[in-house]
Image (cartoon, rainbow, N blue to C red):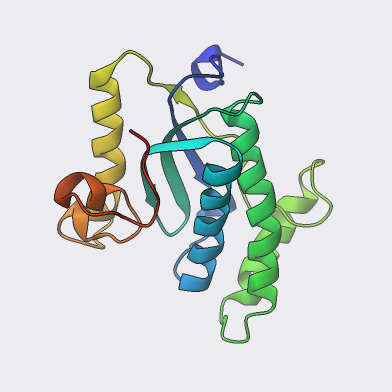
Length: 183
């Protein structure tokens, strides 16, 4: 594997993406989004996760992030994905209002059975596609614009700052968004 998409600098600032298997639109319900947001906040408070930009879409999230944790950002992201995969599948199973339950669980189970790393279900795609942004302000700004424009390009909002699940609120109108940003 090329070092282009690996965590090569444990202290670096990275653009990362975590995508749900088969691009399933799980994050359309508040209770599912809340599970992910709480996990990210936990890692900010307890694992040194520093976030400089973010967006949560219906089937993925993007972060511009680093960590002060000695294990590095790769381990923090693994923790988020591991914890949330169990919690989110449990929330889907136990949600009596979830009309897509059988379909989603079937997809997660199919992917889990195809992977030797899972017991039953696989929620997240393998990998994070990390791109190191250190010492390149232009690259940082391009990735920040890219993640903030995701909801606009998807047709969810007209302006980036209208998307609640994004750091665009922090950058465009200087209000605190749902996740605390690092300076």
